[in-house]
Image (cartoon, rainbow, N blue to C red):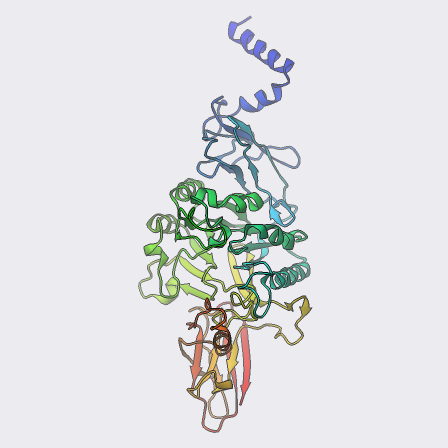
Length: 528
């Protein structure tokens, strides 16, 4: 017998006796951080990805949060990781497979046990029965729950109660969508500095029939940790990795931690720690490696807590950590929608529609208002006058549309007089003293430059385009005036999605109409 064959059979026999033959059979088909080769015994992480029928899945991205590899033809993968520095191994769930979830939280990762020198992580993905190209996303931002005993959560409504209203509304809407999958994305600040509230937050998701993807916000970090790495521990305990991705249909979704906490170890746990916006070196390394496996013809939906691109009066793409790196990476793709919260106001910026020579022609920046209303007050509006609620995003192939959905509950009770499709609010001249110019004002909170004109009609004017007018929202500012001495965090806010016009002399009522970028027509009436 050939000596090499004899030695090989001897090893197999020995491994069978000690119960390790299955592991060896898996390992011999693995190579470096790629595919199609023999297993290197020095690989710290390895495993197999298969479907629910036991068949291997090739080309699945697997990562340790720094390095990314693909499964080979037999579904095998391996990574040469430093397990002292890595806490998770996770997959990018490919299109064509269901997103497994437990109590509303996607299950795409495994936690690496402490003090392990080598770890085997196998993943099983369930094949989707039909096409997953068409689906709906319910997108929220900054629920930011605080304890009911918190001094800064006592004025109008408690944030936990309003958060529960939001969850109830989302579940009701999701139940009405029966012809396609539903997912949700929360853009960070699920809690407000209080790490004991993670249980309360997750309690709101536990009976969701759809998975909720998250990004970490600045208030989701342990505020007095000595480093950013330590500050994410509680978030990771409940929600898993802070940088990851998923394919939903034909669109690629990337979730990034773009908050880097400073050394705040001198603070108390209830304080708010210092941080910088942007991507850490570790996040950049993961993003660069991950995108090297993603087709440049893909549409990207990039989600972070704070915006990667244009904000009101500030350009993160110039000033944030590693901005030149991530903007360079994203510029190579077919189109990029950047989604964020953090600022608590609604704002959309479509570079190609706003700029003659657009800086990022393939990018749009979208910022959502706080889904639970004005901070501290938890009022029915955000600080810029948009109602508390969330965005409903419908995706069909590469066709992406969205619409604002106002929350239909308040402290568990159905709001009977809520407009069915509320997209704009009109104010009469000098309404309640909120304005003194004599103009009619309209707030169109989800407006962007792709919308049609905002038309005004009264007894003397017919479909006259209103002027964009950066000013305050009347009702939101009245709340500021009422509570500013009690709750000093409140701020007087102006917004770029206000419109105004001088009414015709003698007019006592008016109608306003506009059409969004997707052809949906909205109207509002006002009288005085």
